[in-house]
Image (cartoon, rainbow, N blue to C red):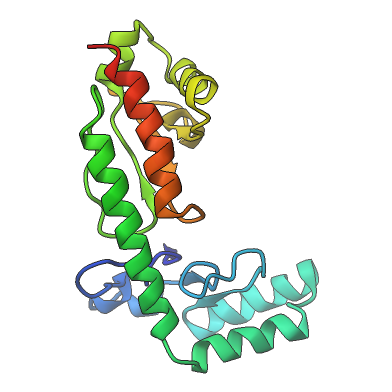
Length: 199
């Protein structure tokens, strides 16, 4: 399985699929969603792309599980696929601005470091040093503290599975998909101010 939900949310370069490599197209099923590239979150429209015999089996299970995707959603998907990509390009530019704004503020915040991703609309800042300055050991305590003091909400590394043995760095996840740049500046500015007091 190749989960390619974020395949088209790429800031620089050309997206690459595992199916581009010899011997892999015939043994790979790509999972794709319309929710990212076409901003159709909630429409519940996606696709499985792969060898005919596998897709036929998936189709039999799917028909018995959920019957089918309703008619107007299917037509919306067709329109999205056949339509111009101008809006997608605009969306990527908007996401890039949000990403760059958030990264600039976060990397200028005491005790926080974040790398620049080339895809998706999430950031995974390392908050280990900020937590140490607060005397916190649990990232969930940090999340609650920041939420209580600033109103800034995010998930933590722990929301994505149990940390591995020996994993010592603490991370949070911020999404910048459903928030405008001025709100990012305001929210992360409050967080920066809160953590700057720690110096």
